[in-house]
Image (cartoon, rainbow, N blue to C red; front, side):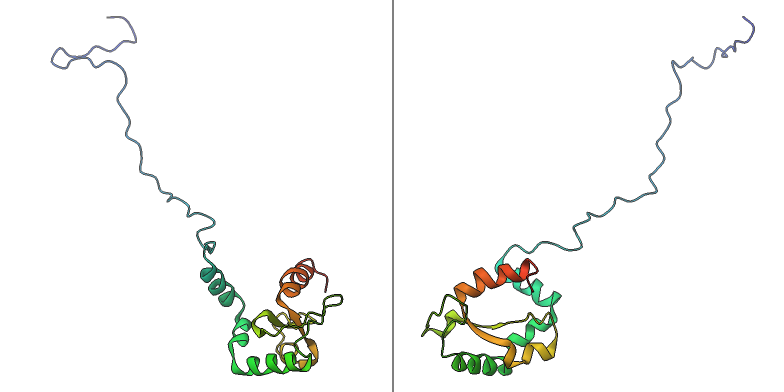
Length: 138
């Protein structure tokens, strides 16, 4: 036998290579998806529900008080779009919007102020006014 070498007793067969190590169990759990906490609404109904939950003041639009105020604004403005350059007269009131001149952004006094409301046709409101508000015009 050479110095520095170990001999195996004849009763135990010599194994080739090193012993296999077992992997220790992980102590870390998988991280949840970052977007899982706020799912993106896919249908129009889900978008409205999500928006109503995020902005509680949106419920004010569903009250009888708002319906009366909206009607008084439409009558006051003679069912005519007040947008400069439009002046559209609309008999179908579902195509008219009682629009806040200054966005209320949850301010209850500004929301219910009739002097802050104007009649707009749906086309002017949805196209021009909403684009201005999103761009930070006011």
